[in-house]
Amino acid sequence: MRIIFTFLFSIFFLSSFAQYKSIGRTEVVKTNNGFQLLRDGMPYYVNGAGGDQHLDILNFIGGNSIRTWGTENAKEILDKSHELGISVCLGLWVGHERHGFNYNDEYAVKAQLESFKKEILKFKDHPALLMWAVGNEVDLFYSNFRVWDAVGEIANMIKELDPNHPVMTVTAGIDPSEIYMIKTHCPDIDILGINTYGGIKDLSSLIKKYGWQKPYMVTEWGPYGHWESPLTSWGVAIEASSKEKAEFRDQAYQAIEQDSTLCLGSYAFLWGYKQEQTPTWYGIFTKNGNATQSVDILNSYWKKNKKNSAPIINYFELNGHKSVASVKIKRKKECHFTFDVIDLDNDSLSYFFELMPESNDKKSGGDFEKTPEPVSFSIINQTNNDIKIKAPRKKGAYRFFIYAYDGFNNVATANFPFYVK
Image 1 (cartoon, rainbow, N blue to C red):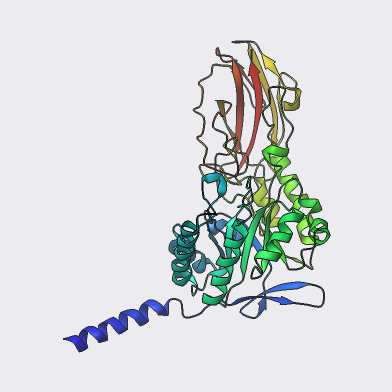
Image 2: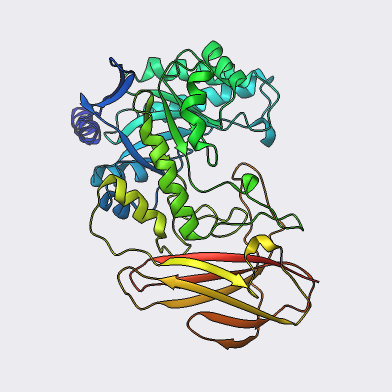
C-alpha cells in the first residue's frame, strides 16, 4: 500500500511541476551603450501595462507584459498571461509607513520577509514570470528610512532563492536622496522602477543627474496626475478629456522611447478601471470595459494592428465656458452643456450623461476610494451636440460626465466640474 501511495504521490508531484518546466529566464545585461533585458537569451523590451484585466486586448495591440502590485490571485494571473504569451512583473506589497507599518518593529519586518519567501518559492518557476517588484511607493509620505534596509533584505533573499529573474523596487517619482538610499542599502536591486506622470519628459535626464547607474523602467505613466493638474476656484482638480489624455500619452511614450540606453520599457497605468478622484481619471477603460483613445495610442507604437478606433471628444463646455473657467451656477438654473465628438470610423454614437457630487473620499497614493452616488437631474432639452439640464437644488461642487459610445466597446469621456451656489 505504501509503495502504491509513494508512486501516486510521485506522479502527482511530477505532473504539478511539469506545468513550470520551461522557466522563462530573464537577465539584465550590460551593452556597449547601456543595458538590455534578455528573456530566454533574446532581447525583450517591455511594452507593458499596469493591471490584470483585458489581457486579450493587450495582446492584440502588441503589449507583452503586465505589472501587479501584489500576489493576490497570482496563480490565475500568471496562467492566463502565459496562455497569451504575456509576461508578468510580479509585485510584492511591502508595508507602508503611512498605513501603520513600523520598520522599527523587527518582528514585523521579519514576518513580512518570511511571508514573501513563501510567495517567491511558490511562483519563481512559473514561465510567465518576468521579474519581481519589491514594494510600490514605500517612499510616499515616509520618514523612517529603515524601509530601505527591509527592501534590501528582501531583494537579497530573492537573489538567493531565484537567480533566474531580476529584482526591481518602485518609487513615487525620483529623488536624489532616495537614489542614494537605494544604492547604499539595496545593492541587489537590478532595476529602478519609477512612477511618474507630468514629469515624464524630464525623467531620463534626472536619472543621470541623480547618479543612478543601473537600468530603470517607467512603472506607472499616464495623464497628468490630479496633484499636478489645474484647480477650480473651489479647489478641485480639473480632469483632462480622453482626447487630451491620449495626446499626452503620445508625448509621454515618445519620451520613454528616447532613452534607449538605460530604460528597459514601461507599464502604462491603469490597464483597467478604478475610482481615484473621479471614475475616469486614470483608467484606460471604463467600469463596463469600454476602451478609450489611449488604447489606440499604445497600438500605434506597439503593433499598429487594424482596430476600431475610439471616439474623440474635441470639447465639452458649460454655458460657453471651458472647465478652467471655474463656472458657478445658481440653484435650479439652466446648465447648457455643448460638445463635439467625432469617430474616425464613422460609427454611430450613443451618449450617456451622469451627474455626481464632488468626491468627499479622496485618498493618496492610489488607496481605495468610494465612488460618489450619482445625482438625478432634469433634462430640459437634448440634441446630438448639446444637453440642457437644471442645476441641482443643493449647493456644492459637482461634476457632469459625458460618455460617447461607438457600439464597438470604445468610448470617449470628459467631465465638467461646476459649483452650485
